[in-house]
Image 1 (cartoon, rainbow, N blue to C red):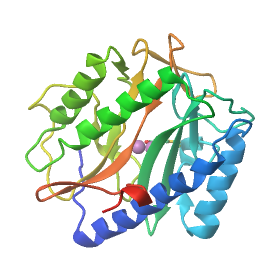
Image 2 (spheres, helix red, strand yellow):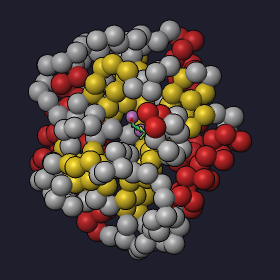
Image 3 (cartoon, rainbow, N blue to C red):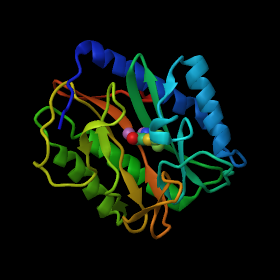
Image 4 (spheres, protein in one colour):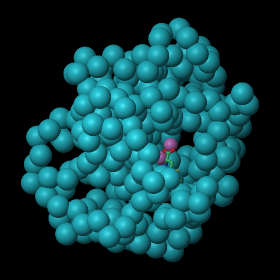
Length: 255
Ligand code: MF3
Ligand code: CO
Ligand code: CO
């Protein structure tokens, strides 16, 4: 396991990349409406990242991924490929943005609820978001990765939802997915100890039904085995001397 500690200069580049990724999510919200296709959202984000931000959409061609963003609708857990699919009222879509700026990655995702309110999707999305924040709030030097996983798992399961096991958060920096793996379940006091200067993502995937997932034949799209709804939120975080700094806050959440 090779965990990188970022220097203050590298941390500053991570802040810039994180801010840009969050700016893309802020921008795309207005376009997530009934009738929009996931391909349209991909094209808008791609153009914004390349032309306005002079940055690189990290997913494009990453291990053969064909698009610039991931769009995961309803029972799609993660890594949904943008395409002809038209969004309809009541859908819940996760949009996952990763940009590279000056050699460093910023990775963040949010849920968007399409059209009129879908109570079940809203409830699941809220619990997934709360779980992500409870995990993030565990981050500090001396704490263990198991503390993060335990906080997330406890919240999700107390609401009788389930945590996906096959995909996890990750270290991030000059490399998109680096060590350590950040599991979204676990036991307190176990796993790697955190240190100042680490940067990692917290990105729990929460299913309304059972935890099991299935990979579609396209080799990317991950769906729930029982076809239940799934929700995910993601932030990129820096471990600071006294806790954490979230690098991918939206413009309206920044201090
Ligand atoms: N952004 C995803 C993550 O949170 C990874 C997407 S990989 C892709 O780690 F190839 F599907 F884009
Ligand atoms: Co990630
Ligand atoms: Co992501």
